[in-house]
Each structure stands twice: as structure tokens, then as C-alpha cells.
Length: 207
Image (cartoon, rainbow, N blue to C red; front, top):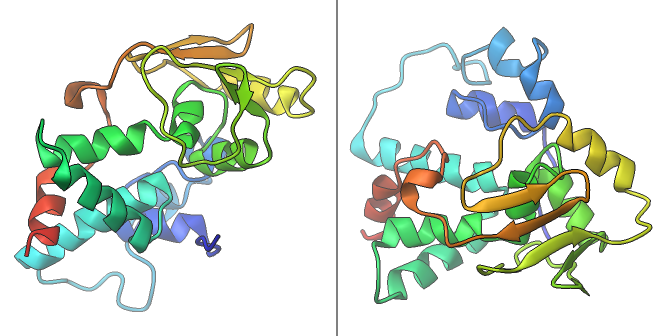
């Protein structure tokens, strides 16, 4: 599957904020935003006219890069969210993105970044309700139990990641000693700390 292979720190600089794409490095002084808070490129320090379209585009790009998705994948999530009869499209979009197993593994504190979580899932290190899942986009549901595969060679990597975790999202329950987690309920918008204005994304795609 195609994925972004360029410098992750450039994405944070382009969006002007930390997207926590490189795990522990983002918490240190080596973070690119700490050293160069302006966008990359020769025109990075120039003044850019903030049009309505640009604001909408930046919010979409920020959300897409935050969850590590390509444009086609992100667009598919939006179309599914827009077709849902219940709820607000923007809230539905974020709820679907949060329910991806790679994001949940990261939210539980079992990975230092979403990229690391995606790799761990892809290599089959995690189980959902006792069954191996190696598809990062797999959608978890309330009462699902996520656990590290017994005897996994990645156990130390996961334990090191839990040491960096300050808190776990309120819609999740994590046991860092047993390396298991449970989905308590669907996340509410107030419980999702994704730094985007989803209404601008909806406006962009609605044109």
C-alpha cells in the first residue's frame, strides 16, 4: 500500500504545529517545531494570504497527516461519514478515524507514534478479542478487547512506549502491566483531542 515516505518533521512545520509523528522525539528539544517554527522551503518565512479555501485545505491536510492517511483514504472516510443518517458529518468523520485500530493502539499508549502503531499492527503483534488483526484500518467497536500477542518479540517496544504515556483517552481502558486495552464506548467529540476544525473539512468537501 502506498504511504508517505518523506521527512515527517516537514509535515509538522508545514502545518505550524506538532502532529506527534515521531514519538519521543516530538517531546524533546530536537523537535523541528521547537527549532524552526516556520514552513519549509525558500518561501517559508514569507507572508501568505489566508483565503477561505486555504484555511479549509490546511485543516484537511492537518487531519490527514495527523492520522497518517493518503488523500484517497481520507476522502473515502469523509464519504462514509456523510452517508450516515445519524450525527454530524464532522463528528462522524473523527469518530471513524479514532476507531481505526492503529490509532487505538497509539491512544492506549502501546506505541510511541501512529506510524509505529501501524507497523506493529501490520506485523500482527496485536489481537482483537483473541483474533489476530493485521489491517491498520480495522474498525474497533465498544467492548472490543485489544491485547498484545503472547510471546510477541515487540513486547519491550510496547512497554517502552507505555512509559511515555501520561494519560489514556476517557473512552478507552488500558492495562499497561498486562498490555491489554478495552473500548468502553464510541468517542464523543469532546473526548477527541485532534487539533482540527472538522467543520472546515466538511465545507471543503461539500463544494
